Length: 196
Image 1 (cartoon, rainbow, N blue to C red):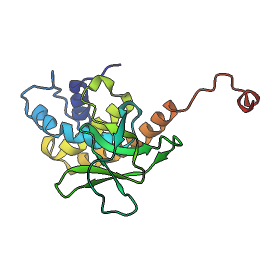
Image 2 (image 1 turned 90 degrees about the vertical axis):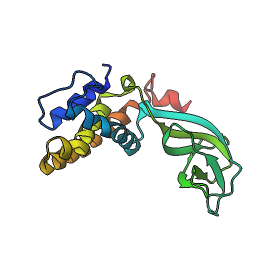
Image 3 (image 1 turned 135 degrees about the vertical axis):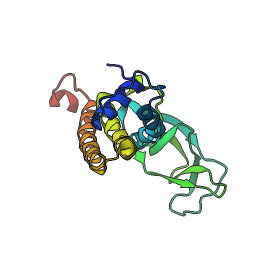
Image 4 (image 1 turned 180 degrees about the horizontal axis):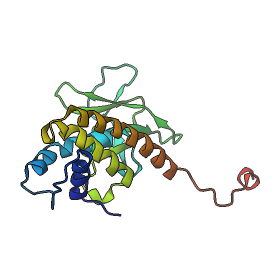
């Protein structure tokens, strides 16, 4: 199923108990304007909260012409413009993932610190096209969007708390579902063949 911003807005409104649904994401109703105001922050927060398989991106990186002040992480990389969260850097020598850390340089720019000088950065990419979203992501996003907009739309702290709890539950389910997608399917299913 392909999702749209309107679908997500309406799910968030339904999570708040609002029966006045929006017809499109640019509608001028008070509810739509409030939801629109929170949408990008909510989307980016949910993307950052988990290493979503549909939002994985890879980029070959080289060290930037900057110096790291951290002796444990001597190499500095430029932060990709579409990066929501750096996850790891893949060492080309052994194809293993190494930790990366996000930081701010002296000019106020986001940078990535690592212990190796070159590799392939694996990160969560900002996904603007809702048709790429998975159902578990949309569910989690709708709860988080409802949580953020609850006070302004329905004026209820209870609805806000309920949607935050529902978001946390949806995230736990989504993480399990997303992890199952990344399990390789062994075609021959034979230990003997794998060992040969």
